[in-house]
Amino acid sequence: MKTPRHLARKYATALSALAHPVRLRLLREVLGGRQTTGELAEIEELGTAGQLHHLRLITAVGR
Image (cartoon, rainbow, N blue to C red; front, top):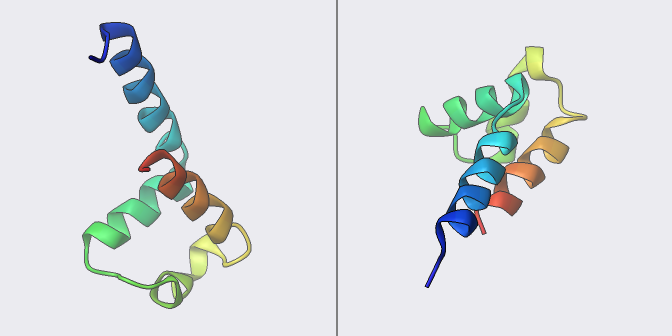
């Protein structure tokens, strides 16, 4: 059984993963229909160098 403290940590971790403008933009783009890293790489203002780093952080929290 998960305790309230455990759930609070889980939610805090998830929220902190989204507490970056690039990660929020990536999430918005995925929710909007972009499905591949190639499609995300087309977003010029985000750049491609840091996108993989941010995607890894987001997906790590979702596991």
